[in-house]
Length: 379
Ligand code: ADP
Image (cartoon, rainbow, N blue to C red; front, side, top):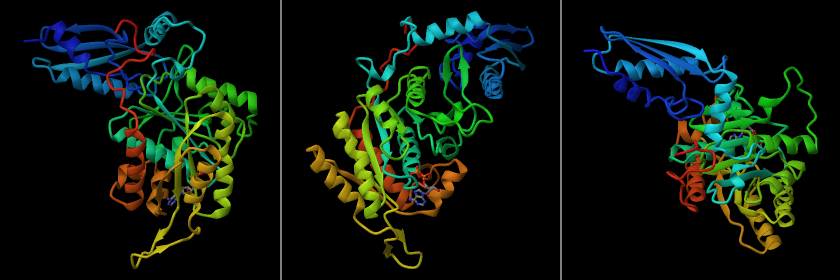
């Protein structure tokens, strides 16, 4: 016996749009369903945009879901593209009927998203590596996590997470690529093609940051991590203004010289009245390959001295959250788009990062099950 229309619809309701991550049935993406007497099913799907990079995934997810029904003999998926008007409707549905002028959802009253801005004094201390590994650790623990790569000089986050594609646009809403269950947006994705020498100046950066925060469909995130450019530049000030609730995480190496610049980056929080969640020391030591000894490649004590100095400057305790050893696999994981905390969670560097992530996540209950302003209206 061929399945009923209701059965097929119920099966389709289990398929999420890979970008928006809501059932395709909720998003009006199912155009039609035809069921022949012999059990052959044809499903017509509306994609949000023609070049939808994830159309193969939608096709296979729909095929798998419908094939699993009793009585189905074959599944054919036909793709179509939404009209301008349908996209507008979808946008309204996703945003609710909020005023069209862009608000940053994380600043809405009732937003439970915790925001961490990851800062460092100088480049190369592992700020981006720490960001992706914390994000991956939190996502693996079941939190909904987004990452904004605002490091205009480095923008290495997409590569480190293996999220290289460009984001899809639905009208003026940007769908962030998803990698390892993390929504990722990077300045690198918005550079005009072939113009690698774009000079990002203060106002332009500020606009870009606002766009990342307001135009991107983040959904109801538990945690948003921002990878800031090194130093105390314009973007740190923008973040403070755009996201007053963001807490700063300072990454440094054990080296005293690095620690001093990290401290300067952190002490900007005193002027902007932001909280500092803590200090993470990276590249703390190299485990000797032959014995258990720790080789202090970059000296010792930088993390603790930054934490102590910031505690003095701010007048509140700034903790040293952890010390991450040097591990070649951490770099390799970054180069291959697989964070170490996922590929080798037992390794000492990953264990430390997982521990730091757990500590940071614990301080606020997850907002799982709660809805933000960006959820489909009427739910
Ligand atoms: P930043 O964002 O501060 O510029 P990155 O995260 O890009 O720094 O790190 C710089 C380089 O150091 C990268 O190649 C990265 O893979 C490597 N790296 C970072 N942390 C470690 C670590 N703990 N062990 C080994 N390599 C690391």
